[in-house]
Amino acid sequence: MSRFKSKFLDRKIAPGFSSQESDLQLSKNLKPHFFEEKINFDRLRLYRLNRVRDQLTLNNIGACILFDPINIRYATDTRNMSLFTMHNKSRYVFIPQDGPVILFDYPKSEHLSEGMITIDEIRETETWDFFSNGNNYEKQAKVWADSISSLVKKYSPDNFNLAIDVSEPIGIQYLSNQFGLNISNAQNLLELARVIKSEDEIWCMKAAIKVAELGMFAMKENLTAGMTEEEIWSFLHKVNIEKGGEWFETRLLNSGPRTNPWLQECSNRVIERGDLVAFDTDMIGPYGYCADISRTFVEGGIFSEAQKDLYKLAKENIDFNKDLIQPGLSFFEFAEKAWKLPEKYFNNHYPCIIHGIGMCDEWPFVKYHKNNLNQNSKEIFKENMTICIETYIGEVGGIEGVKLEDQFLITNSGIKQLSKFPLELV
Image 1 (spheres, rainbow, N blue to C red):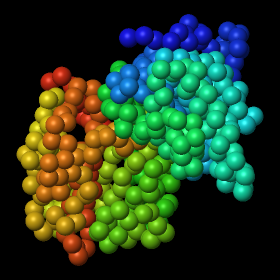
Image 2: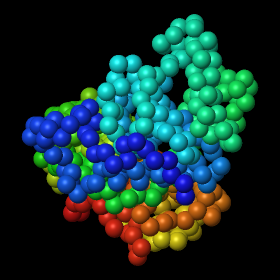
Image 3: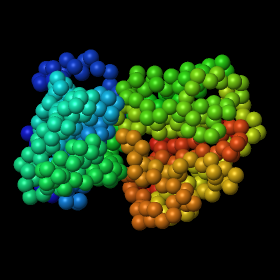
Image 4: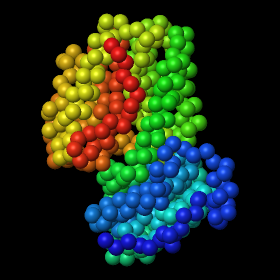
């Protein structure tokens, strides 16, 4: 398959530094993150960029524009104010099937991605949101669309199919109606690109999991009646930042009666003696990869009989389902064969049995068979997919509930558990 030759293809200069002497000086002042020595970062970056370009080719897309900071990170391994740019569309990247990758970065921050092997050119972003332009946003949107149209016509002259992941409607309208581009959704292409992990990606994920589990041990060791949910939750945040992690997708930690129903966010409730404390890490850790692990502790370490019953069912659910997974099994067949949730817990069940995992929760999202119908019946589990198997057990109107979740790699012969944090002995 044809590949554009980046001017940086043979360069291994750290972003922001321009000489071997600078790199050497920098390395003396850095404390390595977990498994850094295992990861070939340029190989990681080129693998992911080529996965994106392969999807463009397979789907006859001339080029894509990515605004979502997670998609930009996957394709280029560059980051800049990730959470800010999730809601302020002030950073994007242009990726053609076969041509230069052009990063449009936030003003005065172009230096952050200099020398990156995945980037051929860095330009200052052209913003066209209301926040940056006020009532001139529509005029600026036309300027932006004109510039994008010019790039497509220059680097994809025979293919005007352009995929965009997220965008304000007016920008898409200009691209389509005024400049004649055929617009489609890039998100499905990125989900499919991201689904098969390389060896380097798996090491990145192992690093994120190791950080999460260090934080989980700190939570468990410090869990004491009289603390608030927010105080115990803060231990995980502290460890993540200390070890090079980035952010949390959710605030899912709750205690006592707030464990049922699930999905209640962390609060200032004071934890009482004997309370269950349930949480889901949803943690974006080192290298931008997600550790998505759920555990349920009990304050004081001693489960009541009712708590034990809930916990045993949750563990049985995870154990049963993980033994089913193998390459070639369809999502639909898995949902049919999966552990049958007792009827009294079904109306309180978690929305899925399995989901993909990478730089965040990713495709696929496999629902319970009762909810699944014929969705995804032809899609299958494949080698080097990474997934999470999870469950919530709590009766509607019940006092408490138990949440468990583990992270796995699908191998050529079955499944390998990546998360190692021990379950409770009940």
